[in-house]
Length: 517
Image (cartoon, rainbow, N blue to C red; front, side, top):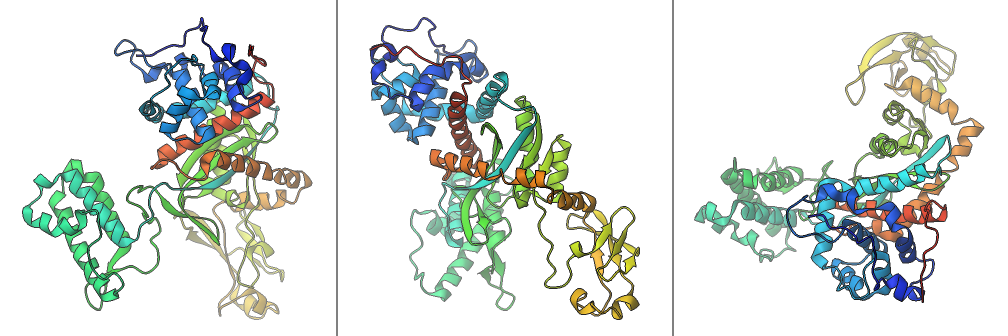
C-alpha cells in the first residue's frame, strides 16, 4: 500500500537538528532543499496497491535514495548503511535523525518497480517538464544527440564457455527430473561448475570436445522441444550453436566458425550484450547509451540504451519523441556524421524537427565519386565531369530492397572519354546508382556549407561534455545485467545531472532551506 511523507515534519528532522553539518552546496543539500518540487508520493501511486498491504516507505523517499545511490555509485548494502548513519544522506532523504535506515533489498525492489512501471522515464520527464514550466528553453530549441559505449556487466565468454553455460541454463529451466538418465549422463560434464578436465592447449583435444559438446546440445534441444518453461533457454542455446559452430566440409565434424557473426551473443549471463565499436580502433562489449540534450541549458531531454552494435541514427527520432512528450518542441537536432544518412533524416523530419549532420563523404577507390557528377533525381539524369549527360535509367534496389534507379552512361562516349582512366574501373560504361534519399542528401550536402549550419555543427562538443558527466556518474559501465536495467541506471544518472542544471538555472522555487544549528 502507498505510504506518504508526513507533511507536518518532525522535531528530529536532521536539517533542523544538524543542518549546519550538511555539506554546503552539495548534491545532498540541493536534494534536501528541492527534492519535494521534483517528486511526490502521488506521482508513483500506480506502483502500489490502493488498499492491500502495509504502508510502504514513501516512494518519494525511495526515489531520492535511488538518486543518491546513482550519484555516489553505491551498492544496495552501502546505500542502506548510509541511509542509517550518513547525515548528508538523511538530510537528502528527509529521514529523522533516529531513523533505522532503508533495507538493502528495498532498494532492489524499488528498481524492479521502476522497470515494471516505466517510472524511470517518467522521472526524467518531470525534470524536463520543470524546465518547461520555468521557461528555461528558448523559442527555437536546438538539441544535440550523441551516443556512448556502456560496458556490460556480464562475463564475456568464448564458444566453449558460452555453450557450457547455455546447456546448464536449459537443464535448470527444464529441471533434471524431467530429463532422461542417459541424457543427464551426457550433460553431466557441462552442468558442473568447472570446465571438463581436458588438455585445453591441444587443438585436436579441443576439437573433439567441441564435437561432444555440440552433440550434447542438440540432444538436449530435441529433448526440451515444445516445453514452454525451457523455451527461452533453448532459444539461447540454439542461437549460440548457430552463431559459433559450423560443419567442416572435409571431415563432417563441427568446428568453430571463422570470423564473427553479425549479431553475436557474447555472454550467457547477459545475452543482450553485443560486440560494439565506437571507432575503427576502439572496441567494447556491452550496450550503447543514446542521449538528447538541449544546447543552451544543457538539460538532458531523452535517454535510451540500445544494442552495442546498433545504429545510432535509429534512436534519434524516438529521443525527440521523448522530448515532445515532456513538452519540448525540438526544432533542430545536431549530430555527428553517423546521423547524416537519409533514413535518419527522414525519421527526424517525421517528428517535425530537422537533422543537422554532415553527410558522409563519397569514396570510389580513387575513381570519380558520385558527388563529382551533377545528378537530378527528379529528371533521372546525370552529367559527368567531362560534360556527358545520361538519362538512361534502369530500375534497381537498394540494400533494404527499396526501389531506386541506376543511371548508365553511353558506352561509346565512355570508351573515347579522355578521363576514362580516372572515372571507370572496368571495361563497361560508368554507372551511377541513386540513393533512395538522393534529393534529401544532396540538399544536406549543400546546407552543410552554409555558415549558419557550420556554426551549429560547432556546438556538438557540448553534448560530449554531458556524456562525460554521465560517465562520471557511473554510465561508463553497467551495474546490472540486461539492457532494460542498464537503461534504468543511465536514466537515474541523467536525472542527477538534470537536477544540478535545474538548480544552477534557478528552476526551483525553494532556493534556500533553513538549516538551523
